[in-house]
Image 1 (cartoon, rainbow, N blue to C red):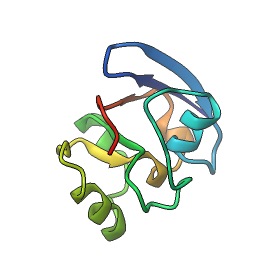
Image 2: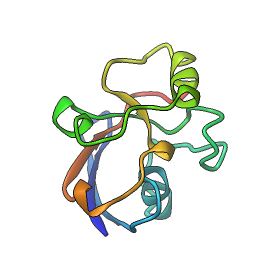
Image 3: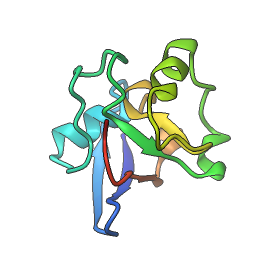
Image 4: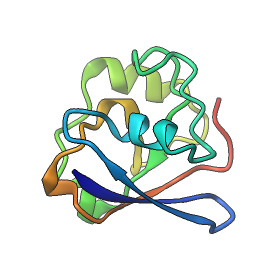
Length: 106
């Protein structure tokens, strides 16, 4: 388990517990966090679970796969902080991670 803080674009915070072997996206959807659409259900085929992760936490994550990079390239709001939350597994190492949500999902 890991405690995850989601911050909506307007600053509203949601602190949830994510189960190991699930994804950041699943933690958000299971806990009804608004701002993650997850239209494809976590198949990395739509990019509607786009999140922003600051550099400190990015250093603790694996690099995005080619498929994730391809999906992120479709997003006009992509930044260096962009990731797809369906591609980030929850682990105890992510305890306390802060996930920023973009204004829009595409």
